[in-house]
Length: 359
Image (cartoon, rainbow, N blue to C red; front, top):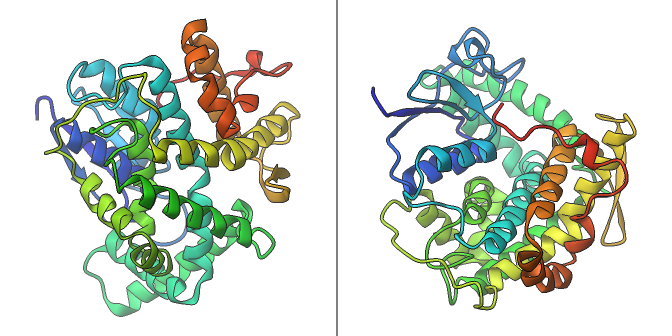
């Protein structure tokens, strides 16, 4: 199909839903495909399917109209901006606001999966519902025996992953408090403005939406959202398909929205310190080893993952590329939120920035 993108995604994948929402909003022709049978609860995703044949190991995977396959949602969104310039862009026109939006998007991508994983694979009701829900999505029409076996395998797999990602008794108060904080910030924000940087959604909104698409479905986090943040719950439904939204960016001299300020604070105090710890581990040759990040006076124990290190290095590179005037304009917001100390290159980091591209 000339000009049509094919998006291969998973039912419980926040990044799949994030990318689908961007395609919908931007009116980019696409097909949403969950490749049934590509995952059966254990082992590698996509064995013997189109995903594996494309050389990919995780969703989302997008096939461009030229037949090529790509992964990694943020670089894909940037590539779509190049291929479809001026067509309902998700990048604010002002470079300073665009950078702040990117900070929020990356913080959402890297921190919000952690509380979600902890709730999803720890709470009793979620441990029953979530593996069955996702396996029903991956397998389609199968017998109860096959669904139950796949769900049990998936639960076992995800329990191990939860521990690696920091879903422990010691970390749980910090993880859960950030979800509570997020709900409070966004509920206040949505009383006055629908999106973070204007009356149209940005990459920051879609990064947040992708993660919340799962929070709004999983039993415990969904119930909390319905009880404490009904505006946010409905916003998730709106942002899932914003194809009918028309709007404008806020002018650069307009004060940042409540939501943008609150989410930048979460980035500066929570997400970016974790990412810096990952950078430190990466430079020390300790990828995939246990690390401890100092987050709000809590020693957050998790696994050092190189992709998280890459994420912060790319942010630092993007900040360094801003002209002096733009940096000066957004500096007050970065100082207020606590983001600024994490955005300058430290010794030995600039040389370690990997190429920024789709996988």
